[in-house]
Length: 272
Image (tube, rainbow, N blue to C red; front, side, top):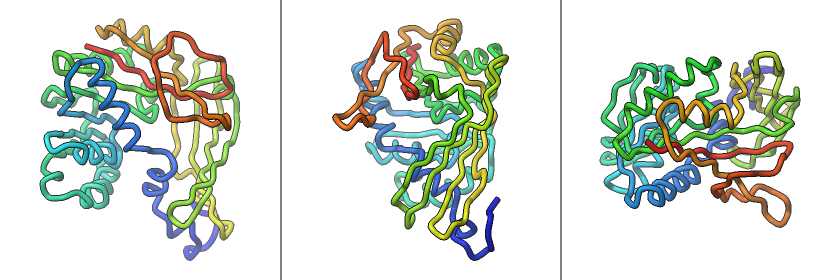
């Protein structure tokens, strides 16, 4: 995985920690979900289920938000859940830890208490590459949600998403490193998309393919149609705005049309 000796920065780095610093903005994600659910339902959500939860960073942020909040994290990877227990859950108070339940199970089979909110973020649901697979997942979520529950997703696209490209971003945390996003291959025949995350360090070392993804690049119309077929109603797309410098401002608002940008990220809410 690494390109130098075992004493270089890449070899000593923790890939999960680097991912959380460079990709996952749990606090802003939870702020959006919490505010949007309150707007849609006129009450505060209490029970959140995070599918494909990985290190359960979002679950932990949710229980920090309010004393009454509870979270269920579901992921099929026991190792990554173990990392989450050792690092993220360990950082919680005893009372907060009691309000987080981690389940090493398949999201297509898991049975939980009816959550107010289900999250499937970081494009994780794109691993379902056939319509029948993704529809089955959406139907399972619809059945699992509380009577007024809401599913939240994210998606990305734009004309750069169909290209073989490499993008870099400098990250200051953890002593500083470079986050590298590589879209290695897109197949226009079936929309297969192979992507990798690499991490580069100041000593010239690299953590090669720290994370790799074999996805289908789902378009927004396809996702919205499958959600509707699965029983969801009032499906809303939230588009990110831009600041004066032309950078994303992190403020997502409901839209029915948007510009054809090179790259965009959006949220989706689907109401039961």
